[in-house]
Length: 176
View 1 (tube, rainbow, N blue to C red):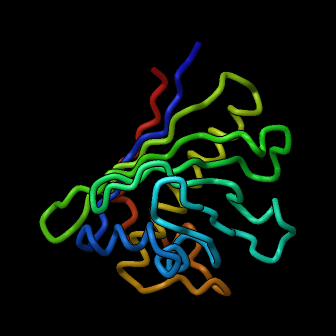
View 2: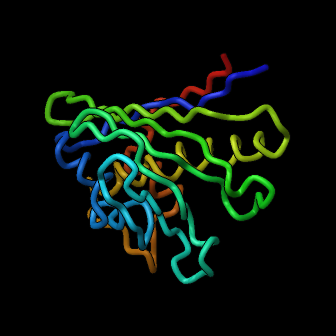
View 3: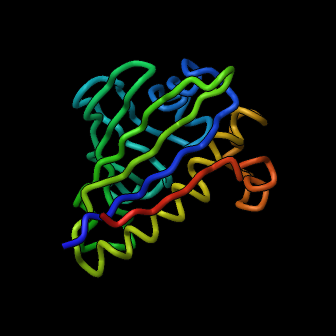
């Protein structure tokens, strides 16, 4: 049996408080992660990220996901479901853990996603999220602090994200 995990870190050019607020407030989430959300930064609070806010309920994003641990400016963990294109496991969940570490005037954000089953469809989800987290979501967080909130009518593409210094992302996929 394999215990897969997605793990990496990225240096964000902003103080811990600002990076924390980007992850724990609705305004923050809308600035880099998705055009809409329902977020309450308390244990068991909703952590619903609406990547497709105009789609039918259940197809918008992370409906039903919850905050798990909230330790201000240090640790944030939440459940994370699968995308609609993987319908058989759509309502299964993994756990994401973020650690916020001051590094001078910047923040080193450590990312860990665990709880993967050993199954072909879960493997598809693993590959999907490896790409989404490390080539889109985390680089877009860095982009936000360099360029301002994402314009959801014209979001930066992956090439723009890479050219904005998103290569500061250190990625490691580990199978333990």
